Image (cartoon, rainbow, N blue to C red; front, side):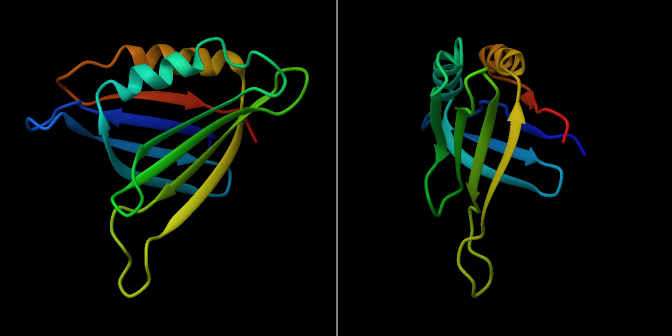
Length: 142
């Protein structure tokens, strides 16, 4: 199983400007997926924050989709050493509570190359309204 992060959406909204994103992530031993609300311009904002990442050995970018208890995903891109090795933390919380349990949560980490982040950022910029589209970030093999 390849390490990856995928964001998909049709960017369709019903007049309130809110759109639904599906964020899916896979690591060697674990996977998770969540739907979270946001705005169509969130993708451009994330792409802009990732432009030229990493810029130093302590670079990090934080971004979130949705809000707790409605579907939530926090992304944290980090530079993990002085030679620009990078990683991404994907923390998600379910949109609905499990029966008698509360909201399920997961955090997944995988390594990623800066060039893959650049390709992911370009894919985020290419979204437009209409059919479901996706942007995928491929991680370093485990």
